[in-house]
Length: 397
Image (cartoon, rainbow, N blue to C red; front, side, top):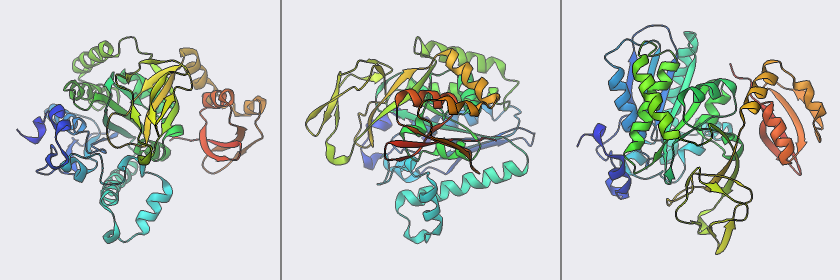
């Protein structure tokens, strides 16, 4: 069986010594560039080595668009090559939690000979991404990241975006359920870093690791995204068919949700998720969701389940999401477009608003009501001091 035809289900069931790419996987999975004006689309796959479906999907899409004429440049990159070859999530450090300014600064100041295995992957991947971004900016190209993943739990696929309107618009066009608020609950993912650089970014979670349908979902999502971005603008028929299949898979899941809770765990906690949970299954306040240090973990709110942990490694046991209304989405676009930040002074508990080189910061108590209002304006948690939170909103290009 060739690497390109690896069954992700079979791959996920192999042991660490039998990774699906044990013969090797290249950093650059494929490139399509016909020299025409258009965006740079970076497709990243396999940031976690136990998620081979993204690599298979990225290669397949590059092969499927190779015979046609495209605009812009598409570059598909493998994430944690060593972990992919070993069939493990990572080699000790989660590659999708290392994209923070202090970590990257320390890495650049460090002798490469001292890199740990996952740091070496980060250094090389960062170098390729920055080289591509630099060339794109020099040519006046928009930069778009499509980061491919899968989950350990059953249930529907979805997309994840930081709450920036341009990224949100792309995710809505793809058609998978959109989950906002990642950067408020998880530190250091590639998505948050690249959107923080002013680019457009969407994470595509195709489904369960071992489900063969996961590759198909990721392939369809990539085709819709490339058509929406104008890369394959003339290939309307394929994009429409792909979007139709995505609509069927989405079913009655809310189109947009906000990630409002992440349950932290440590290796010594012995966390065990209750069996049978799947993405977007409703959760009731007080419902038992798992065991941690021998005690029952109860749901703190009524919500929808997302990414319950059924694998050995992870720093979050599960996530909870709430439905976001269409009126909220419309209002958020309007208040940001009109730049109504002065209205923040009217919100209860806001202490100060000041401009900085990176955006606008405000200080407010950590109440759910205040969080909801600030999120409407595009603000997300930055740092906590005592019982107050400093909030910031990116100014994307």
